[in-house]
Length: 76
Ligand SMILES: [Zn+2]
Ligand SMILES: [Zn+2]
Image (cartoon, rainbow, N blue to C red; front, top):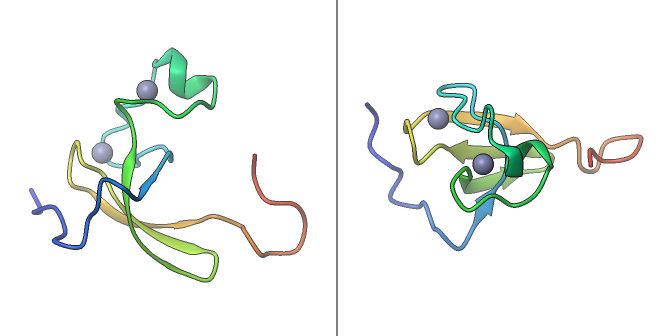
């Protein structure tokens, strides 16, 4: 398992489904699109619309396309 990034900060979180462990699956709070206290990801950095995330549950690191700033309306 990967270590949690030293730049990870609990003050910077994102609510994105984790492709590694899918721990939000079946959670009513997450399915309602609310900010769940249990299922969130560290927001490590952003590069334009691409967001670097790490899952505190399984330590999976990935880049997520927020679609923010792209043509059309942002997700949510
Ligand atoms: Zn995970
Ligand atoms: Zn949840």
